[in-house]
Image (cartoon, rainbow, N blue to C red; front, side, top):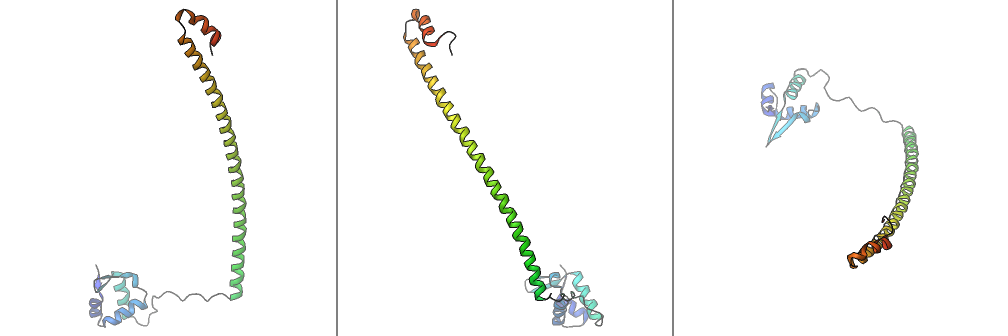
Length: 160
């Protein structure tokens, strides 16, 4: 697992609180894991603390101070420019969305027209099928010797 705060403190001849302070000072919190009430340091953290305690005059490994904040006016100008860019992108996206909606509406209208044509054709064919079925029933109801002539009359030469 690693070495505990107490173990490293006794090895280096300092208190457990000093080790904890150096962990915080050097930003080694992500190198410490807790199991129950015991904190374990990984090898990197132990070496960094030992190095810092042995060489106190050396600069610490703390991250560099954050750069100074930009002047408020330049920050406002920068944010205004970013806002304008986002607004233009938003306008472009709205135009693209409107074009896509128009295309989808045209496609829907075309599909509805095709469906209406197909339904009309289905109705027409259903009527023809019903007519043929009636004719076939009429042929089946006639005696066999009259069926040939009746079929020619009802169905026409060659049938449909």
